[in-house]
Length: 389
Image (tube, rainbow, N blue to C red; front, top):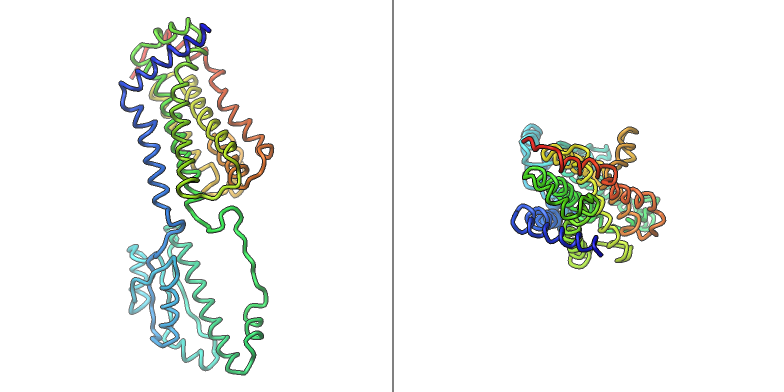
């Protein structure tokens, strides 16, 4: 009972600190929720739409104009400019006015009528990975559709039946199934990793910041005295408030994406709650560990921010970890967000049991227990260290 009273006393003390210092409120609630709204609204359409592309139509025939109209009708592309020659189109790409352009030679229709296999070209920039890839996909599709339309017209003119024409044009029918994310939405697989990563950044930073402020203002001795010198009780009492506030924020984010935005999920609510709980504990634990590793406000926050920012790249959401070099694949296991993302993919996104993600569960529990290895150093820092800016 005495330990519980001490934890309550320290928790109330921490609530007072949070109330007086507005940075806690902004970093615990305001900024994480703003980040969640920003990323989910930025990708609310699932895929970028109406990306600007251009056309160089030197043929100016009914066939070339039909190709241009079909390209403009695609969801991801919008024809915003018609150029007189190749150089004008290339300059527009270099200036960033269009992501790609379709080049139709002046003799395309003539060669089609003479069955001489005309060549149309498309050019796209990869300075923007997403924009260039999507523009290339549409241009490649319109080129294939154009050649298929011409082939169908020729075979129909020769008297072949429609069924035989379709068989000759497409011998094999591809039946595509996108598991768990049937719409191919960027919002579903990017926001569910990016936003938790940013939230974990704030959790790590505030854990290190909270301990650093005790050292800076020389209140660590008074903090430890409330726990009768028991550093474990002192840490639990101090950070139980952080855990509860952050847990409420991440659960609110999960309710928003699944309840309001209707993100697909096959896992149960209990999997989501457990994952959020481990996310908060692992992040706060890493922040405490960073301070214990280097008991300095500036250095511990630098370590936490560096690790959290790197974890967004190492999580595997934007670039698959399996495609990285072997040393980077091994390094990815040292980031809490990587384990969070794997558990999310396995249990929540695909609906597999938690036993399939047991190693990642153990890893997050390990990050939660990291402060155990530095509690003595934290206590020593609070009692003997002198703050140096």
